[in-house]
Amino acid sequence: MPKLRGEAFWRETLRSAHYVVAPMVDQSELAWRLLSRRHGAQLCYTPMLHAQVFLRDANYRRENLYDEACPEDRPLIVQFCANDPEVFVQAALLAQDYCDAIDLNLGCPQMIAKRGTCKSEPCINREMVILLANEKLSVPITCKIRVFREIDKTVKYAQMLEKAGCQLLTVHGRTKEQKGPLAGVASWEHIQAVRKAVSIPVFANGNIQCLSDVEECIRKTGVHGVMSAEGNLHNPALFEGRNPLVWEMAEEYLEIVQKYPCPLSYVRAHLFKLWHHTLQVYQQLREELAKVKTLEGIVDVNRELKLRCQEEIANQKEGEKPKEGLPFFHWICQPYIRPGPKERCKENGANEKGARGKRALEEEEDGNAELLSKNKQKKKLRNPNKSFDPSLKPKYAKCDQCGNPKGNKCVFNMCRGCCKKSAFKATADCPGHGLLFKTKYEKSLSWQSSQRVIQNPEVSRRGDVDVGETSETKSEPSS
View 1 (cartoon, rainbow, N blue to C red):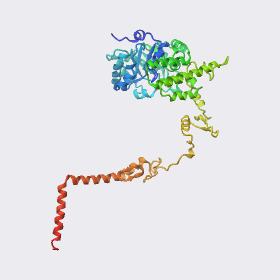
View 2 (view 1 turned 180 degrees about the vertical axis):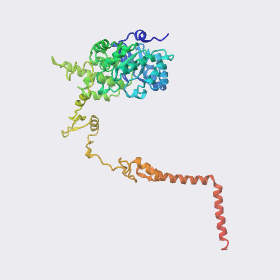
View 3 (view 1 turned 30 degrees about the vertical axis):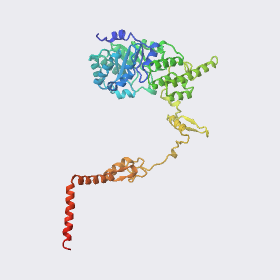
View 4 (view 1 turned 90 degrees about the vertical axis):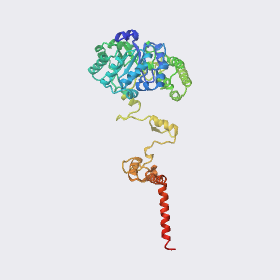
């Protein structure tokens, strides 16, 4: 059958999908995709896969795609990051029988993508799309991009990908610099401009917290569908327009995981997202969830969180409102709004000059508050006698060459790096750093001389005979 293209591909193969679960590293695995589909998602992407690793590692292919084949999990798009056109094509050929399209990620700021993709170089990206579009591939090629600051540049980039053979384009309305606390608001204006400039279907990504956001985005930009990542992780029923109880979603997800297992780190990460607001209240259970080593242990923590919330609901006073400015009580699935840089500084106790403050740790012994980072607090818990007072740190003598701490027993009064260079040049030893250039050189000379004796035993014996004859000759006159 000939490959469907553009609108026909979106309408028939993807079944006119409007509600899309984004590709998320270690988060959009089969169990989570099935949960999302049960609650309104119409199309899902696999986690972003590294094309080079997918091509060379059979276990990676099996764990991330082959073993996850499931009739309920369609339509499905497999996403790759890649920087080599040939590698990308070969990886796509291995994946094509398990999906409905192959997606090339051209704008993810995550580290796996930076290792696996080029820095959005249009010529290489265009070549990868052309190769895959023209290759004997049974499924279409799609792309996901981030916007440039300039709308015109974004539009030209999208048009270039369309001409290269891209059959569907997802536009994330943020630049590659907008991530983490600097994420900010996605630009629907950029997405709208791209939608008007190309004839292929377009998905929008960014600023999706609830179903009303989805509807508004489609209305304002004219896109075919809307993709959600963070919003979906905090509320898998987002596309249903519901805000269910957290434990309902968590228990349903854990049941699916028992049927379709995945790494424990994925499960833990999902529960951290679902219970995000509740774990701010029950910090001890947060620590337990972080330390647990088995799926059964995670189920136990989830059960305990459920009991705590139910007890809180039972003791709730009439007319009581959610705290911390939340739209709902913390046991209800709801979006998490990332704090901006200023808000984050305030949370961490920034001083007037804007420098990042340290979290305070109250010491029970003397009641004094030490300003320690969270990492140092953990070290303090493991070793109560540990001190972080800079004045108590040991002071080291400096290397004569570079200023780094020198070795206490170094014969050259240097750090190990400088000592090694000096000892090599001078053919000297430094027992303090375990450098034995002189000793090894002498042993080498001794070994070479012994080898000469072994290789020329006749010369050695003649030498002994000559010495004997000479001594006899010298002794004759005396007789």
